[in-house]
Image: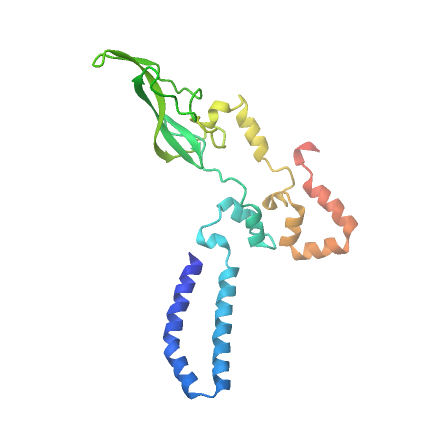
Length: 241
């Protein structure tokens, strides 16, 4: 979005300059025309470089956790691209009577009553969670009907602290339905930093720590043996000493 705004602004300025520049081309020597064109091309190149240097997060295209992870990296754009394959956590529970269908979406599950042999359950939810329909006798048609599981309107997945912080499996209502009894302890252990406080802001990555601290990086390059000992010390899990 930010690039588009700069582009639009640039077009407006170019339109304002065009008549003046054309007059100069018509009245000035050829060398002057080349000089003017060189100035405009330099200006365009500068704008492009500035736009390209702005972090992608400025346009709201990067998840906050990825932005924080890559903020201290020497190559911000490269770090963001490397993290692009990481699924973004959107929620862990669908509203009641809704099943998770992927990509942060849930769909309403309902029963469609049909005559015997009139259809099959939606494969995505059949045999999962608590989705059941049973049979129903239709007095108007004087026939026994069976309930077929169908999917309806789509809504966004929700977040709750009562279930593990992962997306539900497709066809199920929440991540609670597949959680271990001690999932809270498991999740706390998984989120706990496994290094000393200095490396915590860098996801316990020694190299990322050095890139964010040029003086420390210079020291490490000049003293490789001492730096290796320091790396081992900082990367050590404080609870497993």
